[in-house]
Length: 142
View 1 (spheres, rainbow, N blue to C red):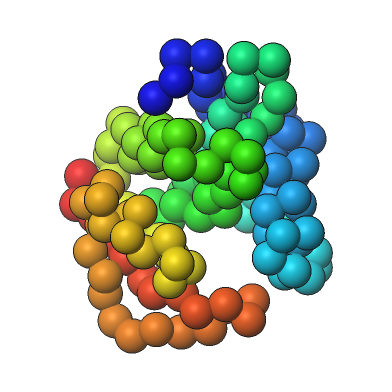
View 2 (cartoon, one colour):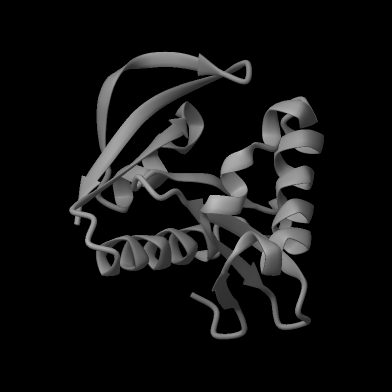
């Protein structure tokens, strides 16, 4: 991973503006997911991770829910394939382990399944549609 990339962990109240900017760019604008489906009450209950580039611009985000689900993983198109998403994911998994969780799970867009497999996640169950996009449930023992 690029040493100029920094990951900040925190509450929604602290990281909302930056996480929202990334999620809006990726999910709402790029993937055309309705904004009403993107925002939920769980954001206030999650641990959030935001990646910043050398200029301090938010370029990636993800969240850890209290039940061990990782979600809302997003990296700006211009910052993909540089290890940003993997570092966000790894830091969220470390936090899950620190919180006593023995497994983490997520719903991966089918196009991202190979990414999560490289990080040790295993597919569980059949494909399903979420927000109009094919997903698969995946989990990993910590």
